[in-house]
Image (cartoon, rainbow, N blue to C red; front, side, top):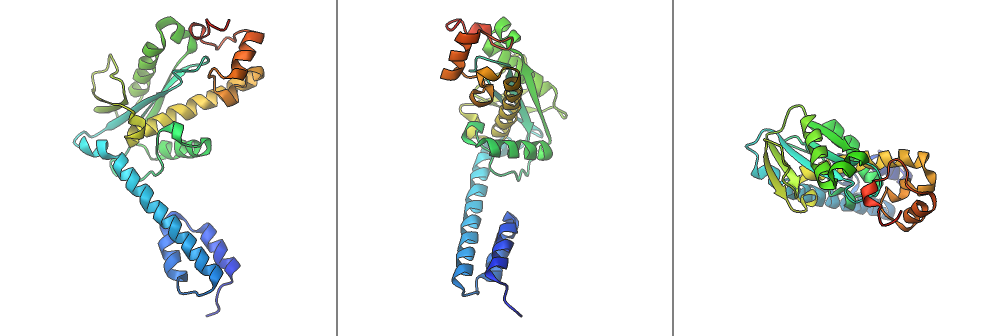
Length: 253
């Protein structure tokens, strides 16, 4: 049989999904051409990285295994407690027991591209997922902590099926009858909480990108409403917008 050219093999490698890397290595490991051996080595590194990621995700499901007697375990987290602008958003996610989603992490540790990719995967594969959004006006009325709890209750309330255990990032949510387990830095310790943090972060970032179109001088698409230098300068020059949290900007206007 005529050998494939190195260019053809390179194309095959580029099109090889994670599940087929081992087959690629077996198929081409006997090919003695230097370029092919480099590609086999590259595939081997990808496979090793994949094994490490699966091991990391296994560890990230430790709380989910600990509480496996609960049928529907829900991770809960928020995004947007610190910014000067816009709502606070909570995410709530029930992952399947045999969850095969890779690369979940604290949303702040992921690139924007990776968060966007995982957002779609989580929506597709989760048993249930939702977000709760509480406006800047409500934040000013009841304070950011109470608004965060309200957003979390909204997110949890929209889930179908309803969870019977909550894994929360650090907080105990008042007004909820479901058993809760607060976990300090939970978005980096629990896959369910990490998934919720991704849902919340992507939802809020998309809102800020829309706000940027309305108020381009504030650069909301890049600063996401946080009190960066360019944001503060615009605030002092143009004054607050209707979406600013007035209780957060007293020192600037």
